[in-house]
Image (cartoon, rainbow, N blue to C red):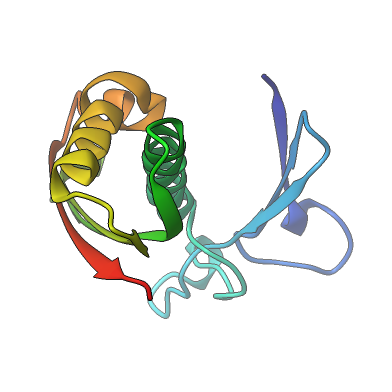
Length: 150
């Protein structure tokens, strides 16, 4: 796996703290910092997600992917899956995540709660590489709900 991240302020008249990530799979992701009135040279232009937001989103994507795959492999009629993540960060540098809460909303037909609970636990404890890495500094908790689709 590879990725190249380039500062967009390094060319032309652009300024700020924007970055463009080009992934090995041929995709592009834009990141930017928050504006900083006290130190404008340190701030971004609020044009894209913050780098740490993309880390959190990656963990959510990894976990949701696992949950859907596990439920499908169990032949459950899963129709949707979303995960809301909330994270706390350390007060001092490096401001790593210290606590991450993941709440899954799984929709489908007649999916047993035990199957969703198992899928979420397997993702958190075994399969999700992002959660495994973030779990080194953050307490990760999970919850879920099921929406029945008719």
